[in-house]
Image 1 (cartoon, each protein chain N blue to C red):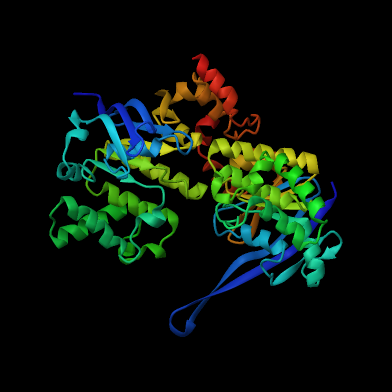
Image 2: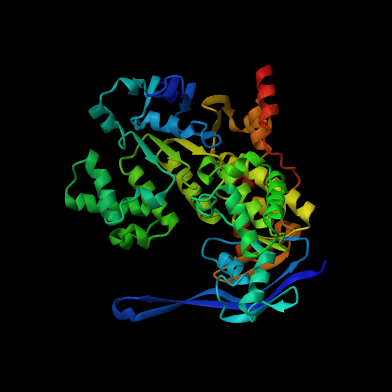
Length: 266
Length: 279
């Protein structure tokens, strides 16, 4: 498989100040020399505990976080050096699905407006074309055209996440970054959303960067896994291999922490 | 001596505005002494309401009927003052969000003292000793006593909540999704801690979760709830390996398997209601 995105030696530091007149300073390495390759059409999962830098890594790929050092190649351009016009084009091709479906949809917009907004921003189609796109996308994520006139609060968590997915996919992106898309949902709803994401991946030939702390979900969706801790890349490889034969102590600890895991092994 | 520490008999929870709206519909269950019972279900299945009815902390919008026997004493017949004595002393509860259940402007040492003060009259020397003892029990360094909740991590905050719950050596501990907001590794630590405390003090535990993995790790008995009703209950091994009810089967099919072999199958509610109608 061809690489879709190559990120090399990414580093990002945050300086934390404490005390009166910010006298004491400490440096936090959110990302410490991290390199990743995302292959076209595959799913790469980033796992780690909160604060390990996984969201910083994802956000740096669309320049929502400005990186200190490193370079990122995507579709022939260097993301960290492009001008704002080109950056807009890149962001059209890298879309994001967020963790909290309650916070990531504007409560004052109807679903139709929420889905139309990215199309307007990127100047795609006229009114009629946009409507056709929205109508076909909403049905693909398992909602109906009637739902387009509703507001986010009228939906359940799982349905809102479907709206979030529809909004991300309406621009026909190459790469979709899913930041903990199912961790706020019930198991039964979680299964629906995971299944939906998998089906859409096949249908639209999508590439996913999947951020999660749930290793059971990783096992189910990812082709490759990256394990992160304290901003550093601890281990990476094919999902099967890492689960069967973890090399680092930290990965072993993570695997041992999965609930229900201990009894299954014995 | 009766083998059950808690006996719930035909519990119903309904809205005061609309008596036909039953949120918990006629459930009966027993919690065995010294064992862990898990209630599993989706959100809205009535599992938290069941827990809140036990300690009589239901919202004023709701009312309940039925009997809840704790050590052969009917909790539903106690008045407010008698019930207050039970809470914390005999039955303690830990909540899901350790971030919101602690007071942000008081030190954790003070908050643990507060919990003890409700039920015991200790001298300040004894009190200090007890607070330190409790912090040691849940694995928080004693110096942390003067810390405020925002200075602690999520896992440590949950440990403080557990220390408060343990302060009067309760006989029954109700834990409502205590690890849902935590990282996997921290979750594993907290589960281990709770299980250790349960064995050490011979407590009984009622554990509410939606994660079958956790059920497998800590439960002796499991109760599956769906739409306010209990659809299946029994020994954890037999329920998980040979689920009888179609809903339990469907819910188990939603859990991704660590071996990666199982196929995920979201619940088909139409099919499920057909299957349930046939029962």
